[in-house]
Image (cartoon, rainbow, N blue to C red; front, side, top):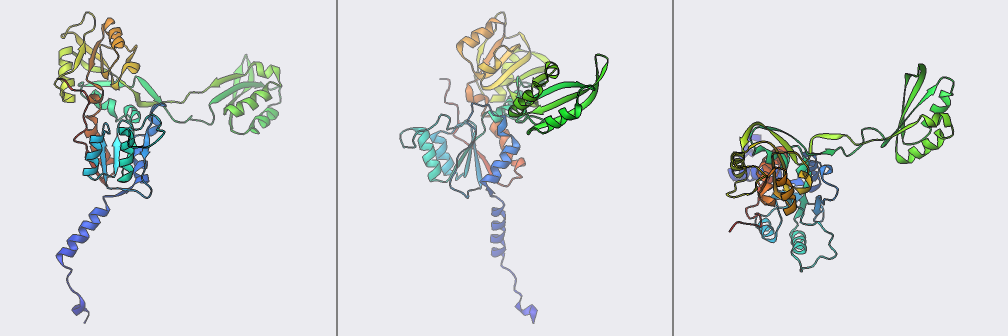
Amino acid sequence: MLSSCVRPVPTTVRFIDSLICNSSRSFMDLKALLSSLNDFASLSFAESWDNVGLLVEPSPPHTVNTLFLTNDLTEEVMEEVLQRKADLILSYHPPIFRPMKRITWNTWKERLVIRALENRVAIYSPHTAYDAAPQGVNNWLAKGLGGCTSRPIHPSKAPNYPTEGNHRVEFSINHSQDLDKVMSAVKGIEDISVTSFSARIDDEEQTRISLNCTQKALMQVVDFLSQNKQLYRKTEILSLEKPLLQHTGMGRLCTLDESVSLATMIDRIKRHLKLSYIRLALGVGRTLESQVKVVALCAGSGSSILQGVEADLYFTGEMSHHDILDAASQGINVILCEHSNTERGFLSDLRDMLGSHLENKINIILSETDRDPLQVV
């Protein structure tokens, strides 16, 4: 009988099968993971000078079970990576920045690359892409100030133009001119989009032509229009800008809901960054009881971002001596917390956000050895 052939599956087998199924859900292909990371915060947000994205890639295919988060990838941190069997390192600061002419055992950064490849560990760095992102490092830094509204100091621009081309050409044609001939000619030029509408100019009904075109197409449009001097004299050529991205960009200008004393703000910053000490430069005429309403902040090194910004307080990791003097001379207080101390705490929030974004498909762990190289002694 059929029933005599049916035997119960041993509990141990079912348990092993469960482990295999659970384990299989804990992997992501590297390429798929990189795509998801870019969806979380686009690398297009990064500054043009930066070196972001995948920096070290083992030979494909490469699957990721454990993603390791660190602010800086040092040799000590690499030891931790290998001990904890990570497959991908997300290092906020890029360990490879300047071009390498050779990969030998002579320098610590070359050794990082060698050890990563030998142990099939990929390395990815987002750096300034995470600085600019709406849910990134600078927004995390602003959370420590208390209730406030904030906006980027230097807003990011969209990676692409909203229309075809980066130039706009506009001109008008009156009814005595050959409208069909002009429209046929401009529509025959590649990489161009044409719109037209009726307009009344100088009490005369005319047709307004607007062309969006690339640099190459612009030269052809100019060549055609210049053949008609009357038409060309009334032609406007505009250079288009990429649109600004909302809530995205470098630094943050934060306006507190309620003013607080500088002493209170110092306590809030220490608590948020888990620091016992910070460095303070009082603005001329200011004291610890002076009120703070507007804070300009920038994670890491803030000199270039904060320079010239009107605020009661500059809050960053490091600034040059002379930039501090300039700020203080204007009555602006300056708080410095060391470069990576204004960044590292974000990784705890990042772990939770990425876990949710990646639907907990992989393990995400934080470095326990990563730390700022400077300490107060």
